[in-house]
Image (cartoon, rainbow, N blue to C red; front, top):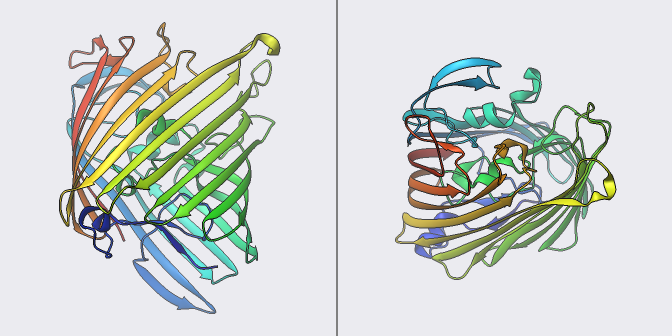
Amino acid sequence: MKNYLISMMAGMLLSGQPVLSQTYSTPDTLSQNTKEEPPLIQIPLSKGNLTFNLYGDFGYVFGPQKTHTYFDPIADETVTDFGRRDFTSYPLYANQFSLSYGFVQGQYELKDKLKFKLAFHTGHIVDALYLEEIPSTRIIRELSLYYHLHPKWALEIGIFPSYFGAEIVLNKENLHATRAYIADFTPDYEAGVRLHYKADEHHTFSAMLLNGWQVIKETNATKAFALAWTLNKPGKIVGNWNLMFANEQPLSAPQPLFRHYQNIYFRIWLSNRLMILPVLDAMIEQKQGDQSTGWNKMIAPAFSVRYGLGEKLGVAGRYERIYDPKSLIPELKTDSPSGWQNQAVTLTLEYLPLNLVTFRIEGKYGTHKDAVFRNSTNQLVREDWYGIVSSSFYF
C-alpha cells in the first residue's frame, strides 16, 4: 500500500495554493495519527529504501515561575530549581531557552510488504511523559515492524506513537506551539500489537492489544484493548474516533478498576484559509471499594480555529476545558477540593518561511476552580499563564 496525504500543509490553509507547507499524513495508508515529512536522506538498499528523518522543537518561554524548592520525581530528589512549571510536559520550564522535543528516525521499507522503524528522542516532553518508564526504554520513540498481510489488512507490533489525542508531541504538526492540558496526558505512546483494516480510501479501522495507558513496561497483570476509526478526506475532513478499555491500577492495588476512555476529533476545512478542530475527551472509571458503588467521570472539550492571513502567515485560537473532580488524570492530581476543573484560551501567530520550518509566537491564559498554580513568589493562585517564542523543523 502507498502513503496517502490526509490533510493539507499550512501553505494551502494560509494562501489557498496547492503547494502545501505542513503535512498530516498516514505513514501506512491506515489510521496512524503520527505525521511524516519527506525523508531527509533516502538510500536504496536491496529491494527497499532506507530513509532518515530529523525533528527539533526549540523555544523561549516567559512565565511567572521563578526559584522553587520541591521534590522532583524526574531526579528522584529534593531540588532547588529555576522556572519549573507544574501540570505540563511543555513548557516544562519558564524564563529560559529549552528543547521541548527532538528525534532522529531510521526506516527501512519494502513497498507493500513491510516497514521497520527505529527512532530515538530527547527533550523536556520526554522527561515529563516517560518518567515512569525504565531508563533503557525512555529514549525510544519508536521501535516497530509494520507488515502487510493483505492489500486491506496490516499488522503492527512494537513501541509506537499513540493514535489518541488531537495534538501530538510533534508540536510543529499541531495548530499551536504548545498543547492543551488534556493533550499532555492522554496516551502519547503505546507498546503492543495493532491490527489495521482499510475499508476504502476514506475509512480505516484498527484494533489494539496494549500493555496499558501510555505504558511500555507493564504495570499490572492485565492488558488494555483499544479501537480506532479514521475518517480521511483530504482538504475536507480528517479525524479519529478512539476508544480504550483498560485496568490501570498497579499490582499493589487491592483490586482492579475498569477504565473506559474515548477521544474524538476532526480537522474540518471550511475554506482554503479556514480550519476548525473540535475535540472531545471523556473517561469513566470504577470508584474505589465495592465495584457496585458506581463510576467517576471526566470530560474535556476543546475547540481550535485557524485562519490564513497570507501565503506564509496565519493565526490560531484554542479554547479548552477539563472537568475531572475525582482526579482520574493522575498527572493533574492536585489534592484540591475540586479535583481538576479548569478552562484556558490560547492565541498563536505562525510564520512559515519554508515547508519544513515553523516559527510561532503564542500566549496562553487559564484559570482553575481552586488555587493550584504557582506565581513568582511560589504562592498558590487560580491563574496560569505563559508566553512562548518557538521554532521547529522536520526534515
